[in-house]
Image 1: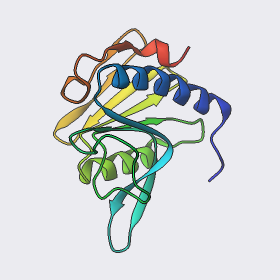
Image 2 (image 1 turned 90 degrees about the horizontal axis):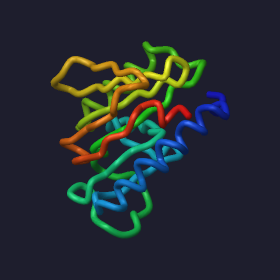
Image 3 (image 1 turned 120 degrees about the vertical axis):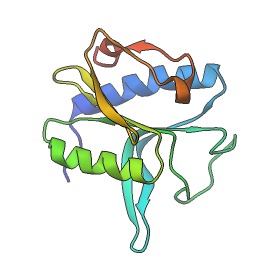
Image 4 (image 1 turned 60 degrees about the horizontal axis):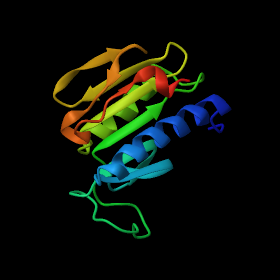
Length: 151
């Protein structure tokens, strides 16, 4: 697959900066990026590269993370759409994450400046740039206008 375009990287950095600052200030866990691997199947193994993921300290202890893929999924995965992405393929990836225990998957689409939130036990939700992104069961009081991710 071709590497993501610069706009994809710009949105990822913005999300990471905002999310990591909040997570660090509230001592919640680890924010990972750069396609850090998430195992979605075993025998044979399938590993997906999450654009951004969050592991609470309940799932992953404080301190440096050991070498190798983690045996458990993150609490939250955030994927940023690229112009070449097809929704059909994104939904396959989202479902793989949810099936292995990721609590929520947020798909950010820079072109219409929207977010879709997927959970295993709920219908998907779509939000526009003027809405706040919140996932209180994962990130507590974290709240940010979606438009900030796309500035």
